Image: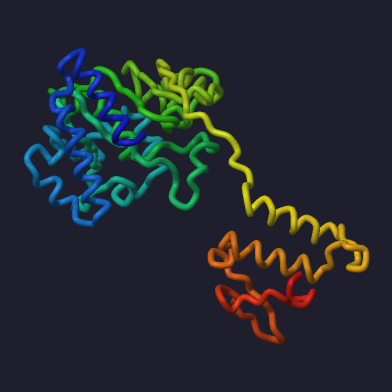
Length: 308
């Protein structure tokens, strides 16, 4: 989901209940940062150094979680599975230099905004979806466990979670395919936390999975209408010329039809008008050398062998 979608959602919440203090100013702050980032003069250090984290009243909130603390939260059985799958936990994703698991986000009033941790095995991202003995990496587990853990116990203390945008990963974690149990990772990480899922209306098959395994209450949104752009103007003409050349629908010059040389010249002229030759240079083999034919040096007449 884009930053603009999050700001819009927080603004609506702020109008109905003051839970997102600073959301109104956050819009201007985000737009300023995005503009400056495009110009190459906005740095992370500068952003974080601004009052309120430079995000219109939001502050950066981060937790350092040790592996021992995570084991205690997960319980013996699930912690054992994580240790077996990720033996070198101090070198995994989201781990600080001192071996702590970093759980971070932006606190805006009573709302904590974070990015869902990356999921998968390095070099084989789809492996986690098909091997039932694998587990999410420790920092992924810590992000969800500490999000719903009470503040008095060192967590975020979330009362509910909103997944914004299709689609997330928590509902795809290893576990029972047709109904969660306590050994299913989506159940372990979400627990009894209410989950509101903002999901695209054009993907009902995967949204059902988010509902069934992710316990999501779906809020559907329509996507912008779209269609095939197709070819137009000169590109359509070029396609017709190439089709005629390839299919051999040619007649000899004496009968008033198009010769191969005429078609070649027409195709090259059309390519130049479409500026295809500047985007994708033609590689021509001349003798035993390969050279790029582009721009003003592009010949309008080539032999059949070179053209083909």
